Image 1 (tube, rainbow, N blue to C red):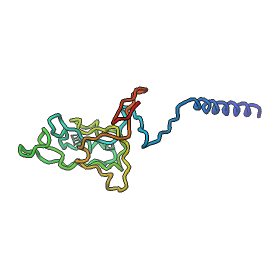
Image 2: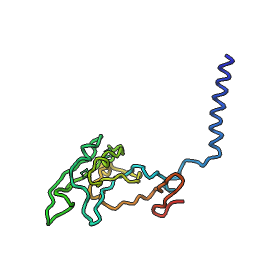
Image 3: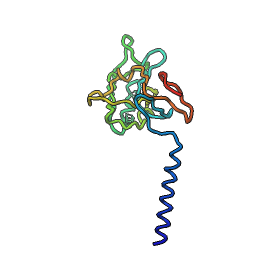
Image 4: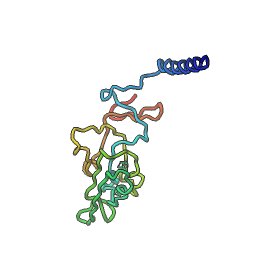
Length: 167
Ligand code: SF4
Ligand code: SF4
């Protein structure tokens, strides 16, 4: 009985110690979206389809990303490039490239599987929408230059300013 009381008291003291320590730390809650949220450089958010410096699409429509995706949320339909209608440097390009963000688990396997580094998971996490259909990101949406509005990139204590935010 006495041992139980001592052990219980120790646990309570330990718990109160954690609470007491927290009193002197900065709150971790964030007034989103009035304040930006800091994410680490390796944070995986919304996908972006990249282009080469000359403007051609990096994606060659090989569908390796779709094959690697554990939730089968990528749909790729390839077509042949021609000299009059060239989209990518290779023989083929992605005529259709859709990602269903409702199924995506942001594992990054698609980016790892891509041989041309065309698909990249960047930092935007603000993907709320009112319609399920808006969660289907088309190739046109993914190719748009994308600047997330609600984040700063943090590298431990160093905050890198993005879109005017940072400290
Ligand atoms: S991040 Fe993972 S789940 Fe999402 S599209 Fe890529 S492979 Fe699929
Ligand atoms: S994003 Fe990469 S892996 Fe996916 S179809 Fe395009 S080139 Fe292939």
